[in-house]
Amino acid sequence: MKIGIIGAGIGGLVAALWLQRDGHQVDLFEQQARPAAIGAGLSLFGNSFDALDAVGLGSLVRRVTSGEAAAFKAGQRSPSGAWMVVLPPKATASLRAVHRAALHNALTEALTPGTLHLGADAAVSPEGAPEITVNGGTGHFDLVIAADGINSAARQALGLDPGLRYAGYTAWRGVTDGPFDLGREAGETWGRGERFGMVPLPDGRVYWFATANLPPETRLADDRAELLCRFGSWHQPIAALLENTAPDAVLKHDIRDLATPLPSYGRGRTLLLGDAAHAMTPDLGQGAGQAIEDAAAIVLLAREGRLGLPSYDKARRRRSQLIASRSRVMGRVGQLSSPFAAGLRDAALRLVPGSVVGAAAVKFQAWAPPGR
Image 1 (cartoon, rainbow, N blue to C red):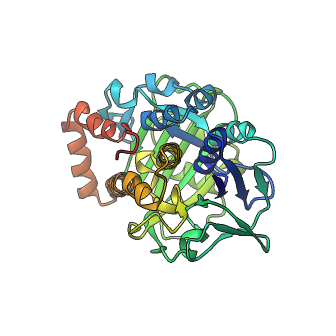
Image 2 (cartoon, rainbow, N blue to C red; image 1 turned 90 degrees about the horizontal axis):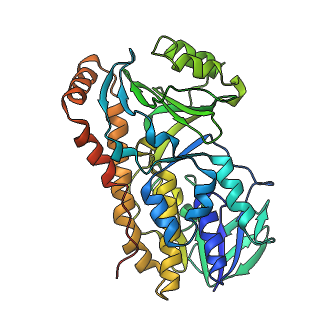
């Protein structure tokens, strides 16, 4: 098949790379003028690697990721540093972490030269016809895949966009300037309407994230100074992580997801992939994983000669929308701000066995190929 893909994020790259290796003619269009992965760290769980292994990309991704975080003590702590719940080893056994740019570069370099077209202002047909208009010209394909992110122009063009919903909180992300010793402890710390998390990266640096309940579009003069004010009195090494991150390396984004689930992941011969189809909050760490699962489903359905919108919807909508829903709930629980509600949450965490919490996490870390 001749396949056109819009968006060179993780999901678009995985789809392009293995469809190409399966013998399909692939053109990948990216709006950015040069390859770049905006972001910090990325966590991939077992479902991501089950899907990657199914299409033959598992070894490539494992080479640039680290499983060190799986051996760390993890769970939820209070701002004082007391552990409220400790996850059992099986809950994080499959976790591998990577800097987003490193994974993006590894996938990009594996493409056949000439596949990736940068600076491409690409648009889909509103009727879902297999064609892409690029910088004023129209290319014709057998299939179009739109992996153009949370603000997907393709989703809007196809008449499927329900709009975005502000989750009620802002997130900051960063990576330490150099190697940092976490003392074999990672996970998240939950306060009142605020959270902080940390994950070790393959090169010894640490990826961290922080959240706070704020009005949307809140602008701050100095994000790192704001974070030190909010989290500087929390347990170590939180303040040290912030102090070891350059101020201009701190990223800030309001957290949004789709206002309502999509009734279909495409129209005609145009399919939506990743955030374009099911943008979700980061609270389960499954955004990239679900994009990878989408890409794997497309590749496997194409191999079986049954790739089309009905089979793709059947393979992906129910699971990805369930995970998006559970992620939204997890975010609401984590961001509770009233002393009473947050106090009840913390008391419940201390009472519930870690094995129960871990079992809920593991439930989403299993992946199965598309059924018939």
